Amino acid sequence: MSVAHTIQHLQMLHRTIPGISVPEKYPGSLNTAQLPAVIIWPGRGIERPVTARAVMVRVERRYDCRFFLEPLGQNNYDTPVQNAIELLDLCKSTYWENKKLAEGYIELLQIEDSGIISGGELVAIAPLTYAGTAYKGFVCTLTILELLKP
Image 1 (cartoon, rainbow, N blue to C red):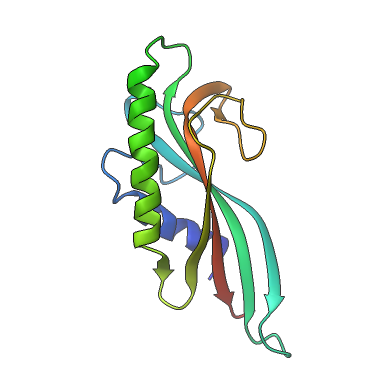
Image 2 (cartoon, rainbow, N blue to C red; image 1 turned 30 degrees about the vertical axis):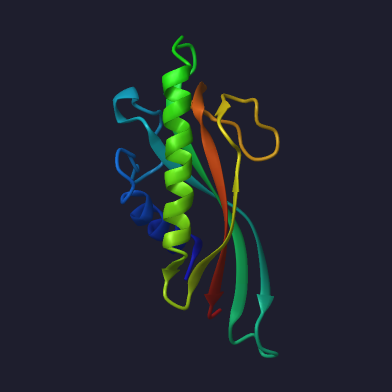
């Protein structure tokens, strides 16, 4: 398996969540009509041989699933925040219900979420800024185990 293959599996999983737009490619900007949207960014990974001859390699990689809900600057906070809370809960339950993304090869180990954030206020994970625009939303960082044949 590869990073691109795992991203494809995550995109398929996100398409099962009602109301979420999942771009096929990384867009130059986000169209407001297609929000909420999720964009997946591969992060740091650790590779270890499973056997002495490294016939199989164990990879643990973090994937940031950034959920962009609406641009900042719109004055209505309560409804988007309430919707974001519901969506965050739905995403986490969807991840755990589909822990094995590909039988025996790709498996979810851990979820770290940012909580509801606005724009660039998040330091620990990833800011919700895309193409120069800040957004309300959240980030789910998934630690995923992949078993590879080098």
